[in-house]
Figure: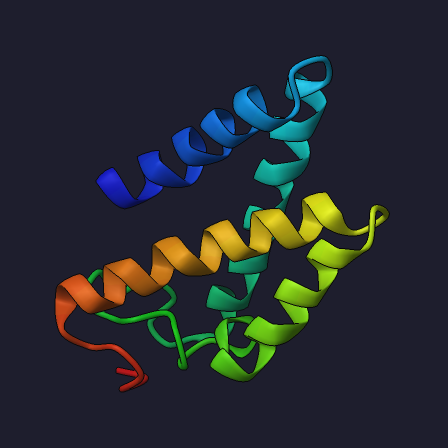
Length: 105
């Protein structure tokens, strides 16, 4: 429950802090990056509360993280990159809390 709540509240905090005049638009765009979780539909079972997303799902591969960071450098992709970095950071923290970092389990 906390994990999902953080995926909503942290982007809200970032949007309100960094994008004062356009925070609603920024927050919605940051929330849209949660669509990266559609790759969970490829897993069997689709939802497993004890599974670390990092290294298990196609769009949650550590090799992609530099690409997500690279998106931060360009104004056209900055919000996309920011949302993905926030998302992967929260998922990574979840994996560390479960003691499953990089195991793909």
